[in-house]
Amino acid sequence: MKRDVNRRYELVCVRCKAVYPGDEPRNRCDCGGTLDVVHDLEMLKGRIDKRVLDERMGSLMPWDVSGVWRFRELVAPLSCDKIFTRPEGNTGLYISGRLSLFTGIDNLRLKQEGENPTGSFKDRGMTVGITMARFFGMKTVACASTGNTAASMAAYAAMAGMRAVVFVPAGKIALGKLAQALAYGARTIQIEADFDSAMHLVEQVCRKRNIYLLNSLNPFRIEGQKAIGFEILQQMRWNVPDWIVVPGGNLGNNSALSKGFMELKELGLIDKLPKIAVVQAEGANPLYTAFREKRDLVPVQNPDTVATAIRIGNPVSWRKSLRGIEATGGVVEQLTDDEILQAKIEVDASGIGAEPASCASVGGARKLVKKGTIRPGSNVVCVLTGNLLKDPDTVIAVHKGSLGKNIQGRNQPVKVEPRLDAVLQELDN
Ligand SMILES: Cc1ncc(COP(=O)(O)O)c(C=O)c1O
Ligand SMILES: [Zn+2]
Figure (cartoon, rainbow, N blue to C red):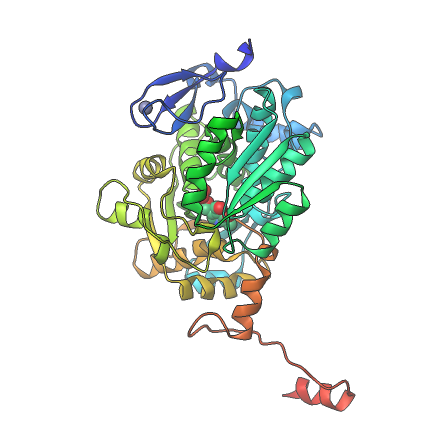
């Protein structure tokens, strides 16, 4: 029996608090609720501290180089030889005068998760998901995806020698992500419906065919995603930012961030929590409505937004998400598609660049400053979840003027005759 893991953590239902051992591939409680990995923090007290974690940054061992497994005691306490890592993380934390001006926040930082191996933050959860899939002896993994999870799972499965099946909404996934899933060899099933239907289907398929589900419903994915927050802290020399702003779709990422920070506080590594702000698109805003009306989540039917990564009406992790937002004193905001596109123009023109959904964090921070929720003097980190190159179609459409209304800063390409005078005339104009 694989006893090296399960004694140090349990799986606990977020809804009914039922407890399950960690040595079986389980993604839901018998009541249907989602599961948390609950670590034995008492046992960890005094065993990990900032110095140990910082020292690992100077090591060449893959599990120390990884911006996820460097924090392994709080991720999945496996022996290091079982870890499967690219490695992921170690993404840039940037400042930008342009984006400070745009948001009105002097102390703004941009955490560029598009620098991960497959170009999105999903790699942080996926290294843990694939490691656990192998640990459990599974041969095939699957996910429903708006694109980035599919790309990440396909790549990690290929490197680990596992079969991958991805379910994506037909015609509603960005070009770069579909290309990645195909290129990395995943069996790619385009469902003639939205993400929520694909998600519902993939759960049933996994149960019927003994396939390991690697959506962020999987509690170990969340454990890996926590490391975005841990790495931000290391990069800020353990000074806790006032706010962390993230886009919200299936709501795994923000749930992970708040869980990780709460664990660090309980361990005494930090003495306050950053407030978590989640930003949704107006056309896919079930969390925004639930938060505003202080009630359980009601799914949005036929969600729609230009930010296809967060085009989700029935997010799986909403209970975890609301729990974390409440615990940190955070908020939920929403943006129109034009506000997302305007933020994208700014993020891209700053030289950092990101895909549309990612830029909701920057657009959201700007809106929250205007509303007085975020004070301009605050220390704020906006997470850019995915690389600009994931969605070239949207970039071209915005700049050519066929997407978005009243967008400032379009950069139209021009056609010029192949003559020096014509080129010079164009430049002088
Ligand atoms: C680029 C990007 N941003 C944000 C999200 C939303 O993250 P979450 O589903 O964890 O809320 C996704 C999810 O696919 C994504 O791909
Ligand atoms: Zn339960």
